[in-house]
View (tube, rainbow, N blue to C red):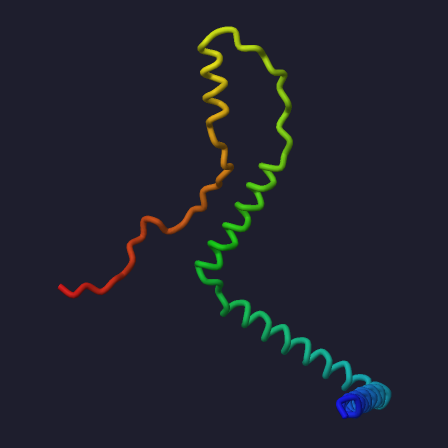
Length: 129
């Protein structure tokens, strides 16, 4: 039964598409100027609606911060994946050079990037005093 139902709906959709193609073709051959004028009007209305929506829709600050975080994360991964030039190993002859080598090994290099935000701005909270 489901196969029959899908076949009927598929036939209806194909029929509607064929009628639309016949209607567009007849409009194009009988009144080409009106056809192109209608297309132009639809394009202009679509462009106006598109620009109004883009103008009125402003991304929230959280979305901007998320975008900045993703950008910083990509930069960090890119920097982390770059191969560091290999340096020839030197033998440590005295105690100070051993301490310097150990200090370099112990330092962590997390490759973090600071994302600027509104840290200084205080939240507007109602006080009950």
